[in-house]
Length: 285
Ligand SMILES: NC(=O)c1ccc[n+]([C@@H]2O[C@H](COP(=O)([O-])OP(=O)(O)OC[C@H]3O[C@@H](n4cnc5c(N)ncnc54)[C@H](O)[C@@H]3O)[C@@H](O)[C@H]2O)c1
Ligand SMILES: O=C(O)C(=O)C[C@]1(C(=O)O)C=C[C@@H](O)C=C1
Image (cartoon, rainbow, N blue to C red; front, side, top):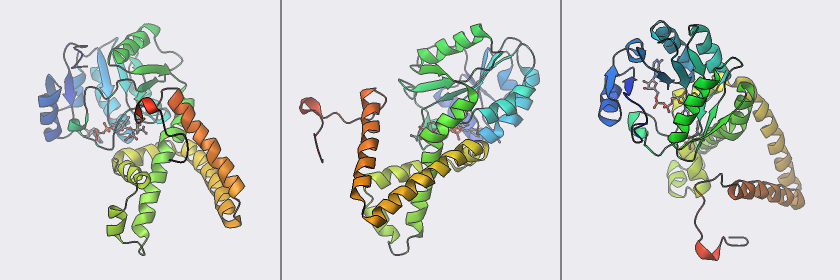
């Protein structure tokens, strides 16, 4: 917002004085010691705390919100945030839950950068009574930041994110945990020979423990549903390996490769390598 000159004054609040000091040097015009002070007179309030901290913040800011203000959030789970925040907000304040599908394994004020949201999805999960004008204003601000905005039902969001983000994170955490427990493979070897697949897992598994604890505690049903399905698929592959069923494995991997190719063709992966004019290697590379 700062880089694009999209808003007037940016007022920030964070729990720690150190974070506030850094935010002031990087992107805030002003910081305040309490969240209540930060929201006074604000047209737009963006809640950027772990999902489990949303309720306390909502309760604190509620009496200080300006009538007509828009309150949104960036939490990775939406039903839990709606349940935590909506009951506290006064009549005349517009609550529009949101979730940018952009981020890294790093956290803290130094981890943000101006291009973070460019060409990334930003999902909004408006409620049945969400004001259309407030929604349109928020949408155009996010689009001006370079995001692609889509609207989605709250429950659908939580199920979709359990598939495309939450369960994959749990699997990465688990795989790194497995390597850690493998006494036969020394820690040194794991670090030294980390092939790129495992290296990507370790990056994901370095994500913030508080944030991810809250994601799993609050999107419990959807994650357990997807984990159940994951276990069934895993057992089918385990059985194919045990039985030497190469046909099953080949057919399975052919299907998953088509899914990846579909993602690339739809332009949904910005990290695709540029193979140059020769095009991608055709086979087996
Ligand atoms: N990191 C990502 O990849 C990513 C992407 C999309 C959405 N999100 C969501 O964004 C939110 C913030 O994540 P982040 O990565 O920006 O984390 P962050 O650690 O950079 O920022 C979180 C902030 O919340 C504050 N905080 C923590 N506990 C608090 C409490 N109990 N009361 C008041 N303040 C508290 C911290 O001081 C910190 O300033 C989370 O809800 C997360 O699910 C994160
Ligand atoms: O690349 C990463 O570090 C991320 O995992 C970011 C990621 C994701 O799953 O895509 C993580 C959680 C968020 O809610 C949104 C984005």
